[in-house]
Length: 173
Image (tube, rainbow, N blue to C red; front, side, top):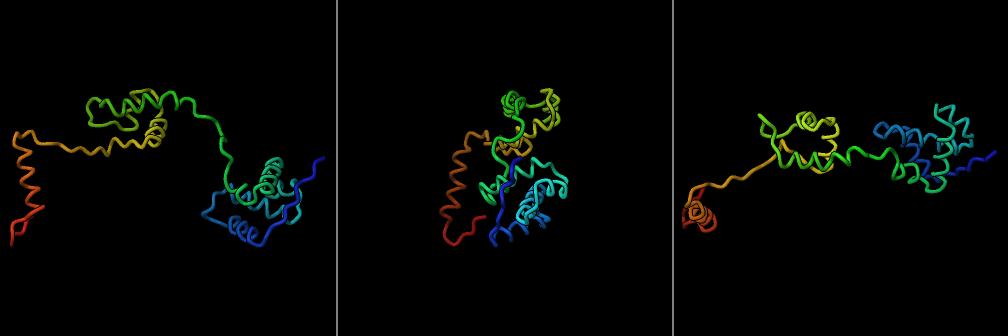
């Protein structure tokens, strides 16, 4: 039978863990982890902690060990690489980005999440995730249109010149 790692806390760690365990603006998973470590510091076993917090015994052991290894930083964040890898998004992302940037929908000025999803037969949440990842906001496109007037450049120089060097005793609006 394995013996759980003994947890001893400094005054600062106890203060931070206490704040996390009572926090309303703290993520729920961090609240539970903080309670686990505080209970472990009281000398409770993993089984007792798991029963009191309604979590698995293996999870209590995992977070106790991570706290022992890296202290507060060990329980504050998940380790990188957790969770399922996005496979379909990788395949569809290029097509979603290219369609968004280079095509316009029929009977509309720009794509919406739902219209593009329907057009490409993917889910709207997939389109939204790709747009967010690539900082695309097709509904907020700004364009600058130049005049087709042949004398536009001459007029532009005259107007800008007025602002840069206004006539003496004149107000340029």
